[in-house]
Image (spheres, rainbow, N blue to C red):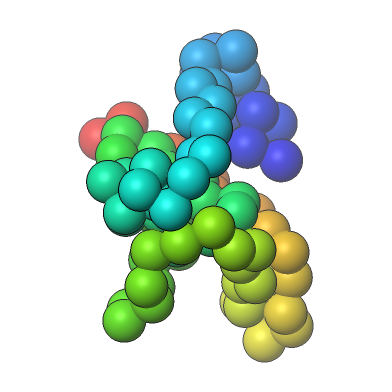
Length: 85
């Protein structure tokens, strides 16, 4: 989904950097609140408030209100556009 959105915006889809968060300490240092976490230019695509860092799975709420294991595609595209400006 992320690579496809990058390609649609004319960016290199191979520029995605995967970061393994293997320990609770890694999660704390990276402010990692669960997988998947997508950051563009260091900015969280779907920021959360008051969530503790940790090795857990995330759920997202799509713009139409449904729950999803991944962020809303439009949130990703918006974050890419913001990073490009």
